[in-house]
Image 1 (cartoon, rainbow over the protein chains, first blue to last red):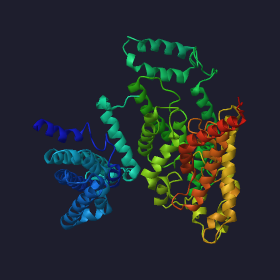
Image 2: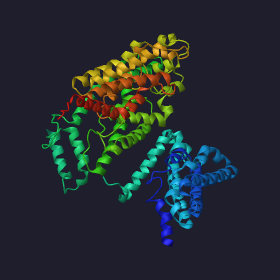
Image 3: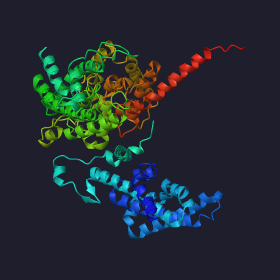
Image 4: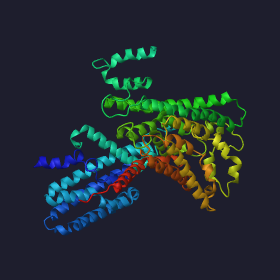
Length: 207
Length: 398
């Protein structure tokens, strides 16, 4: 049983990654990965929302009429997102301002709805919770990798701290403006998919 | 035949079982660059047989680029000395200056692009095709002369990897690699790619030394036209369409002289390598949009009153029409499609140029956009053919 739960957590990190394999949650991966700090906060928020939404829906799963299940799921997600939003505003106001509408848009993050429908509606609370956390972390890892690359080459900083020395700039180095733009985030995600598939041949679709 | 024997000797080291077996594709790439192999198409199967292969085709394009390149080198020096008020500098002084400014760009573009291609050739173990032969020369001709070399290298590598290799190499790319390099440069390092100080070589140095001659701003005619306020009189006092046609205006190496570009156009049309329909329709499209803008010019946008025919000799319009739009891989394949494709490039280029102040040169964006739409145009042309032929079919009623 413990082994099964471990798998629920580990699979989304790599072989069943929500971004790289299921291609879900791409929009927010493009929008908020300009800076590592914002991406990290986003990753934590989504992980918490996915985990607890899965837990709550799993607890309720036997009493939700299937015809209105989407509405119920949305209400749960929306309440959790509002809580997260309030917490962010209270404790990390600057990041919350930076994330702006994207915190509210966690509601529309396909990963959360996907996990509720695919997993929480048919599984017990504990595995559902682990599945939610696992998918959130799997999403978060990619977000952080993309944000790391984008912040390093786009702004020369990591977590807001300058890492590319001033002498580089004096020698003529410039930050890459393209990497700040969303298309480059898409290309980076594409490269990550490329790397993953060249390592894990079983992911490559048969022609 | 000394070189050929030498190459043949070298080849032994790369054959199966020999020491450098894995480097065979890379070696072959160099070999076919030097000599046409015995055959240009496999002996069996349905292939079009021709005496030349893609590499020789591309060599002709290189020759067609030379007039514009050589003129551009001289013009670089000319602009450089003109900015210092030395309009009487000797021809060779001017040419030498331009030559030594352009050669590093060419070397870096080739080294970065070819290096990336050879890396992929080595990984995939297949022979290189046209490779980077034309792109490597196009890139130095379409970027501002003072752009730092490492930026050219970074952009070339990104363009080759993401514009070409991920699609499957030469012949499979959706976008023109040289233009993609320029687009990457433009969006990644805008300060080095636009504005007034990038178009004349060593302009910032000249300014810093206080040698700048009166009346020189470094702006290209296109930039001046876009910035014109009130009316175009000041603009026309500074630049004439004849100057722009001949090419002694600031700009990137290849783009300034419409005359030299047309010379190149004659070469590629005469040898059947460039398609005259695309070139002609780009100019038609540009003229159409120019006319449209002239007709509906408002008082607030002076740029719209610039006579339509002047647009055709300014900026990278002619260069794009002749050498970029005609790229056989990224253009439309159907003959009728070429008219639509070219026309829309010209049309959109002038539209972007005039109505979007953020992009003074719309040619790059127009061609890249139409590159993306080329397969769609082909699809509908083919579909129209099919339905036209189907309508001729008479179904016999039994």
